[in-house]
Image (cartoon, rainbow, N blue to C red; front, top):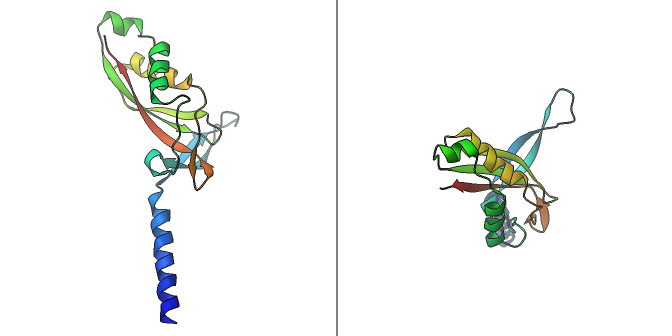
Length: 148
């Protein structure tokens, strides 16, 4: 009897540990079709906490090439020699589409921030993140650099 109880408590502890490894985040997303722009909550996992992480098609090197080909230096920032790095976050949905694109840390120039968000919004669908072979929404953070 004691042996069964100890195994049961060990299994419960193991399940709690496994469940605690996946960091959840509640995200409120605005429904653009709603007349009052009301939001709804969804569960989003952090990038480091999923079993299979979302990935840009072709990998990291392809993503860097895409950013370099898509990014256009804003004219006024170029003319004034403004440089910086924009730290953006976005969610890779269960269908691979990117949404909820936000600037986490600004470069200090609004035009660079807008350009970084535009580049991310143009990205193709990513491979989806998974936990125990189930597709989940995953939050990713990506820096976009602007250097002259």
